[in-house]
Image 1 (cartoon, helix red, strand yellow):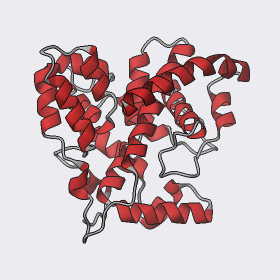
Image 2 (tube, rainbow, N blue to C red; image 1 turned 180 degrees about the vertical axis):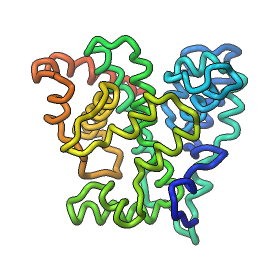
Image 3 (cartoon, rainbow, N blue to C red; image 1 turned 135 degrees about the vertical axis):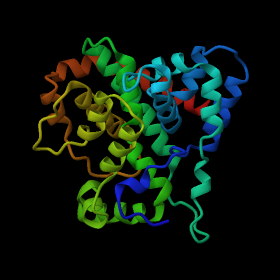
Length: 283
């Protein structure tokens, strides 16, 4: 499968997901006739399915085109029947993993866990900073890396080469992608969420949470997701793909006007949030 431009990574069927995730959600949907918390909890551990749910909720069909920024809102709007149909039509990741007999060299479960931990940290940071729409922060953290999912699904062996090159040259993956592909996983992710019709605040996160060291992060949501991503990395939940992060921790804390004392006080609660996510994933 060869790609020469960003548009070719945008598929009508949506991004693929892990088979275990799909089965877990279907199993939970089979237990209930209502969109209860346990169903939402299963969906929020899968960025690919979450994106499809958000896409459906933001379609003109439901009357809220490009206005639903929260997975919680989207799931409540659609209901279990529509969610079940989305899950049933979600491609399985393994479908893309054979390429001339070669299996993917990437640990996709690690990428999925990183994005879920980032979501939990973004939500927790938003709450600690006094923001009320923590479900939006969670959603933004969950889908921030959809461009990496697309690359890891459709070009796993090329992505591995770029990862190794980035590590060898001590450059960011973005720099290597731009040099070899002509565009980056950020460009891919932005194109995907734009095609899904998501609200501008979520599109802005994908554009800006990988901002370079010299740039100002233009909005709080993007900055919080970027900080959450870095915290996930430093706490042992890196995505296994990116070894050099574009924005340092101290720079982010400064941009967000957070003190070191704030971070010290917030850390126990943030770690508790992460522990809950890890336990749920392992269960």
